[in-house]
Image 1 (cartoon, rainbow, N blue to C red):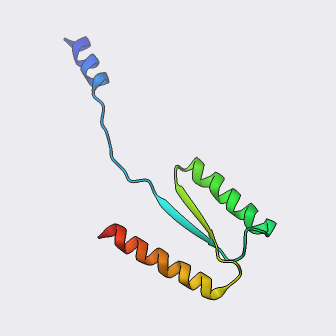
Image 2: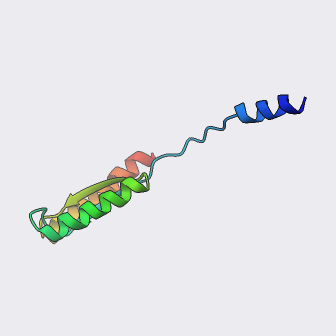
Length: 82
């Protein structure tokens, strides 16, 4: 009877459904600059290790472009949660 219970306990599996974390990184410059490419690559490597979905967006050194990108992301998140 003890062996039977042990076998049952080892055969029971628990499935947990967890949504993958999504992170958006907005680089304040273009991808032509080595520094921001390096930062994005390091971030992507860390995200892969942590099982995080990383999206990298470059704002091309334009504050108005950065603002527009942030607004688009904020609206996208609202649409996903609705």
